[in-house]
Every structure is written in C-alpha cells, then in structure tokens.
Length: 232
Image 1: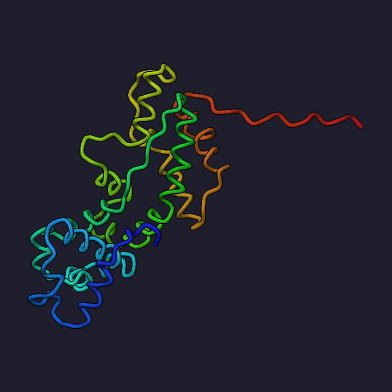
Image 2: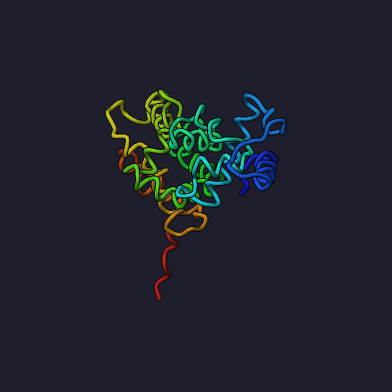
C-alpha cells in the first residue's frame, strides 16, 4: 500500500525468518545488532505488513517477530499486550492531517474533509475491514480507536474547527455533543465503507451544507436557482 514507509526492514526480516525456525534472531545476525529506534521501526513496519496481509486474526507476536527477523521476547518487552503492539503500529502510520484555518466554518470543514478523503481513504478502509475481529473482541468502535490514536488532550480536527468558529463569532459559545461536532468525518467514513469507492466532492459538500451546518444552526450554501421556464 502507498501508506507504507519505504523501508526494507520488513522484507529483510521475512527473508531471515525463512532461514530459521522459532521466530528468534540468531546470534551474530544483522537483525540482532539493531537497537533502539531502528529496531522498533523495523518491527512496526513488519507489524503493518502482517496486519494488512492477514488482518487482526493473523496479527500475532509470532508472525510479527518472524517478519521483522527478531524474537518474541523483544516484542513483549516493548509491547506487553497484543493491543499495545496494534496501537503502536497504527500510530506510526496514522499521520495527522493539517487543520485548515481559512476564516470560515464552512470552508474549513469542506477543506478538511477533502484532505481527509485524499489522505485517509486507504487507511480507513483497511482499518475498518482488517480490524473487524478486533472491534468485535474488544467491543469497541472505529471512533473509539481513532480517539486512541490522537495524543492525549489534543482536540479532534472538527473540535478545533468549531472552536475557531466560536472565537470568530460564527457560532455561539454553547455546549455541543462530540457526536454532532465530529459528525462530518463519521459520515465521510460511512460513505467510504458503504461504496468502497472514492467519495465524490458533491457528497462532501452535501455532508457539510445539508447535514452538519443545519445541526449547528448555521445555514449552508443554498443551491443555485434554476433557470426560469419560458411560458409556452
């Protein structure tokens, strides 16, 4: 996938794994000399490959260790729980999207959805499909996982967009539920998964103008008036 960093650590680990059994790195091998960030990046690259290829059921310590050319104890020391390894892997590839600040609630919302669609369509689709078993086993949702990927204390993009609109006076300073504030991205993700295709720009504008802004009490851009019909 295009989201994968261009590193060869995962491939090298897979080749090394084919030359041995038990998932451990032999003494004196190149894999055993990796340390710190280099080793951790190689492991997370390998973990991403395993997740994409085999989904959550195949996302095991054994599979990741073999792909990375290291041993299971190395993984356990860094990520004691399987979920810890999963979150670390996703955080490595879940890159933040810059939140626009064009001075308009509507323009910022539409611009962010366009950026999110361009940069996240592959990631969101993969996560929702390959992590179905994870969501079932943990009784969690994609939205909860997304929140876990955001640094603690950091506002979501749409929370930032709404807060700026309040500062500009576009919106009153009133309580709003997180569900309403973050609805545009949830609707975009829903359309991605429902159609398994790219979402049209028209649909993105509709999400903002016809659904979100009215919920916030702000009128969207009305459709252009149709040309008058001539009497016959």
